[in-house]
Length: 104
Image 1 (cartoon, rainbow, N blue to C red):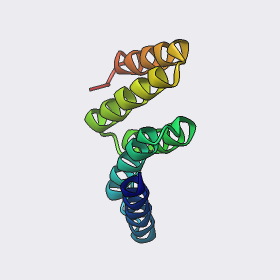
Image 2 (cartoon, helix red, strand yellow):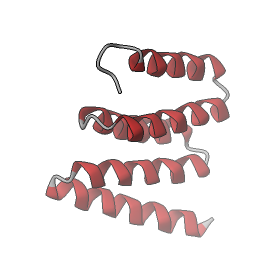
Image 3 (tube, helix red, strand yellow):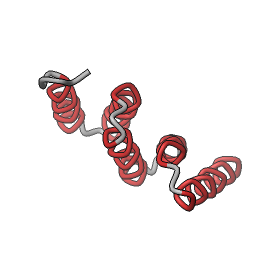
């Protein structure tokens, strides 16, 4: 239990440092890791918010692989939270975005 708190502190520190120097890639990575820790401690709403920020950054950086990875993580967290309608809607929206012209 205490280890999770320590891990969360480290990821929050890493996030602050990455944001401080404007490193979007490191910011997104820290957000992904922090989201995982928050979900592990059953703080799904906070985890989803953090993971959505990571997905937005990856999307803005035009990194479909990273965006897809985070979207899949979000869908799993929505499922665990007990909102299967939300996870289905989110997954469908993401898959639909891949169908547009020019998407990779």
